[in-house]
Image 1 (cartoon, rainbow, N blue to C red):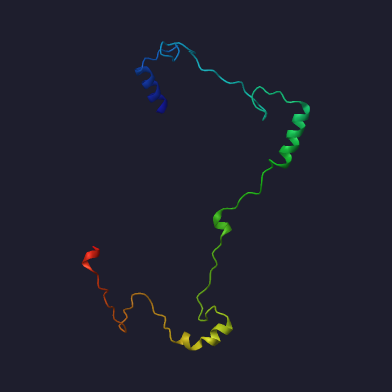
Image 2: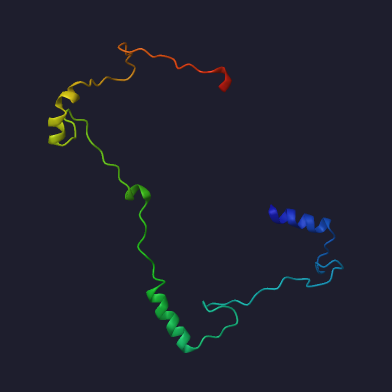
Length: 128
């Protein structure tokens, strides 16, 4: 789709197939293709035997693949604690705060509390 749009724009602005892209249709009529390089030395460079041996040693040492990285859900595993009547606190903490722990009562959701009263905070109209 994008190539069709590009061709339409070029034809709209005066491109003629087989002619250059210059203002007077000068220049190269066909694209240049770079020479292929099958090694890692770059275009036009002819490596010596020493260069090839050095690159081979370097590739074995440095470019070897590292250990695969595990997925994130395997890296950070959430611990699961079963619901038990005992609290997961150390014994000294339980002994010191036994009275305080007995003051709390665990209740379920959708329970309405009636042992306290909410007082609204006064708001000045200037802050609006």
